[in-house]
Length: 624
Image (cartoon, rainbow, N blue to C red; front, side, top):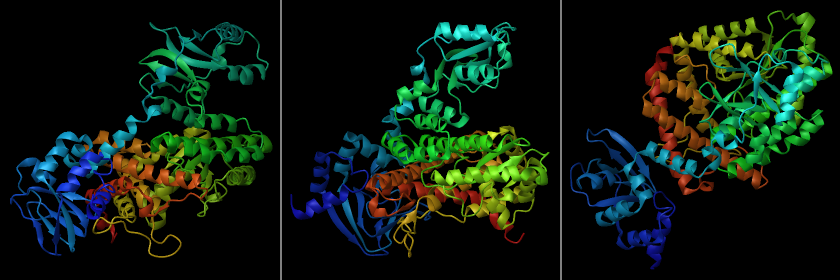
């Protein structure tokens, strides 16, 4: 093959849909290509004129227009156009004009039709828009991801062992021993059909019965767990894993409607996924001091990398990392209470930001706060809670969760307040949405209780959802704030990068990627009164209310997933190379596949921000 043709072939293989194309197809393309040059400002394709070529941009930039003359898209090196006319009637449906001096490869229609009929990946690519290509790319990942497709029923190896909730302590222990199980399901038999009312585990027998020296005739209902966490037969194993991580439970009843089909234990998932983050979590709970936790924290990056290698999706990875972070916090709180004694009044330790959203990665600091019982008296009680907060914060720092540079931590007295004060905070931020209030809203409106009286944070979630959804002014101001961070996509669909400093020639996949998506989705979620915290769950709630079009929800979900997974892979590669992981990416370090689909994802985010601006009219708030 001539040197010029080799150069053409090499360039094609750097861009979709040619990067995964079989050699024989590439040879057919290269041997038939013609090269055309267009000066800036000249027409390449005119509306309704015949077109017999697929156009590939070798260099330069091209503007694509709608029939109305409205600008439709700008494309640059490695992108194609003209395919829609070839698929319809061989006439131009979207006119094209050279924005810069441009070199174009012309692929004849007969070659295009051959590829369309014989290469499924090529067909998928040319028939779809940006968002559909994203969906196709993500679908291929999901199909190869076994942990995502295995159901919890695979882990059920026996019928559930049950007993009436009226049995006595000794009888319950005997049943568990005879049947060789570590958990006993307790049924309420008063109705027409027995219903699940509680569970008792080996650990419960030790901590609630033996340690308290309870009589053998104690009703089992006195010590059973009543507020059960369950899963369903249709759930995936990874969903069960996330449920255990989030709720700190070791046994999950598996339900089919109102019927119990079995019980899965933490050990079942650990055996199925031998390198699961659950294994790390279970070890965290066994540590007796901060030194042990610090030693164990060194395994977190390795767990993260393993999940990336196994093609887990961003929701699974983010939830697992957040679950690990929660567990470190929970164990530190337990150790702190052992050291300082029981709390003088009830409290809830509250996670904020990415941990609350189940979107935490390995590059993270600590954002937390305390919600105290309304009987809290600073003079009598605050010395204890300050000491506890400091113990936890210092311990988290030793475990790799750096101090928050903005002092959003429970060690700050402002963020260590009774429930009634937190409600006043939130009410004031919503009613008076000044700059600081909007900043606080972005931080504190992603919240989750992780230890103590969890009902306090559940009450706050409801309070926020109800009050924010009824304040159009607040939503408009929050929407305006959400438009401050834009995706790094330039005028010609090129990446916009930092111009100076250590991060020159890079763009930040958190600040300019996942964060803008989280911000705009938070606004929509608050508008529809959702209590959800996770971005994917918020999107689901938004979709149910029809606040934005259904395809808009799907496109945002795909865009967020793709940006997040590129960010995750970047951090994993840095860890494997022995570098400090960060969020700053150089385009040349990305694969052609990643570069192409990141542009698609950023385009979706840009369109979503335009809709946000239209939906809430934030411009109207500028003079308020």
